[in-house]
Image (cartoon, rainbow, N blue to C red; front, side, top):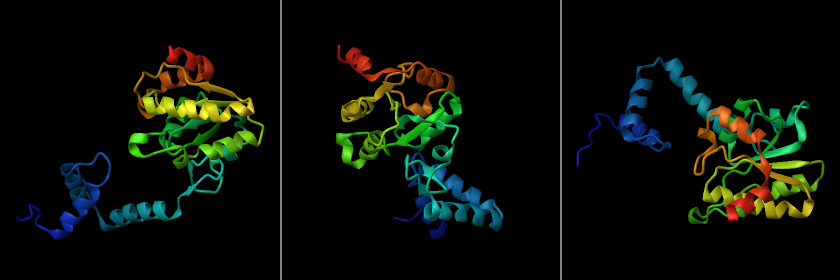
Length: 210
């Protein structure tokens, strides 16, 4: 079967762009053709920035957030309340919560949520390192800010059980975030209010269990 592309180089580039999440072949072709129209200097900057991202990006040794340094700017900020940790699924949730300007504590990025159907268990996430942070002392509260899905609730409960021996306050963001919603797509006002109006996890779990 003949290829619809006039150039193998064009087809190869489209194939690579189409591997990106949310990018179909039509969108991939549009992006590739856009790059072809740009000056070589701009394309070089684009490719170098992606390559440097892959080669040089770090993950914070404390919270696992993406960072340029060993300790991210949030964890290194002395004005943040280091007695409160907000647990999130990934970097996108950190960015979403930071935009609300309603939280001044630290974060802990799990790198996902428990999802047996996808083969993701507790050992695949940064739950053990969260437990170590709490065990080390100085933490007053852990806020669970995971998506209001079955997988998110399962992860919340697992973390709650793991932290029980340390007698730290565990709370969950208010259900102003609709059931089934992803945190990163929630508007800033709703997300900010959900953090401010957080409730103790044990009380929320009792309501969900009814």
